[in-house]
Length: 511
Image 1: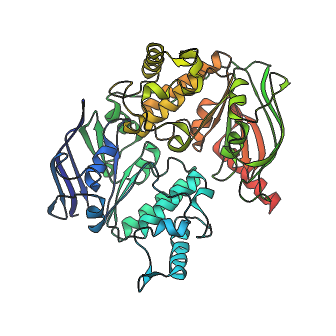
Image 2: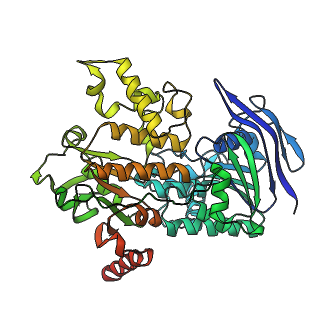
Image 3: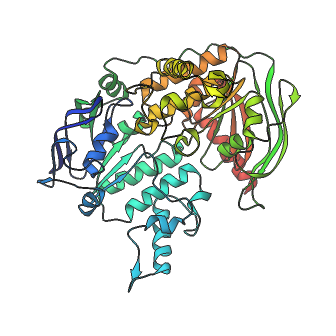
């Protein structure tokens, strides 16, 4: 098998930190090559060097592609050579249509005029290839995060790709849609397209990768040939330098009989299409000390339910009742929801979770500024103490608390989001995809925090597309499908098969 890419001695420094230190990586043509490592190991930085986001001259070392030393000055140069990168943070324009986004900068035109018929027809074909049935005229802003990720992949497919780089492509997808994507990568492999896959989902890596490069603290520590038989434990040992015997902390029951949150007949309509009900007469409870999971496929309405509960952040014509500690509460605005003891850690940290252009110091206390203020003025010393405490507690890898959050890895950004809501000290905490984009070692840290909060009597609701995660950390599960709760079970009696059976049965009833 011929070598399509070699990265030799790549070193990249930022002020105060060496992000990459003499990294070497070799990729064979037509293979699926996995790039793994803990958050902050340098994976995304290395791929930004390769794709020209960090141009030649801003790093040391050589990129050899198809036998030629490349000096990419920007992403246009790398794309002209068939290298296409899909970043972890999406690069779509919300108020343009799906078709417009797919062909942005690569327009289908005749005589300088865009051919909309061809544009929409080709977009529909590309959407079908990634498993989406949406109308190409649909605004990206009207799609959920998972579907937006698939639009990004369709956009990459619209170009003459030879080397496809995917940075956490399945982080916002459920298992079924993730499998479709992995099947697509294997199809690409059969057609001679090379893929570099960055993922924290080690089960996916071990399932499809031919070769694995492992980074730790900005350096190459291992190259693993999957033909030799690699399991997840081998990858973990290389990533973290030790074995991780248990993926989840001990599940000690802390749930009491006291109902912290009760939701009755909650119905939410789409914010644009007012006649469409997205959440349909949902009722549920979560008790103090309980970790409650909500399982479901992408598009089931889980995020929409959570956001509508948290100050009506999503949806319109919302009806139903919420009770906290047995009493009706007004959660009609975000401020009122927070004051009532409710918090929501979003899955979309870029749009809703963080002020990306601001520092860790300023982001962590945001939901509870009064606790670090003297009257109307923030006490900088107290603010810094809080930020430093949560930086240590959640092991946020940053140069200091004065580093901008946009410069952190995706997983460390997620930890800042969690820190913000932990500092708010809510009674009920809704966590939407809390470990999205987080490595296996850091996941354990987050799981431990969740169980510790339950031990303190907090009520925790976890929404996750990873069923093993829900089975590993929750006490009880609701299953959601097409806007309704279609199943409820103690986690001790649950399995992936039983969850899917509840979804399938509900679909048959409504068919």
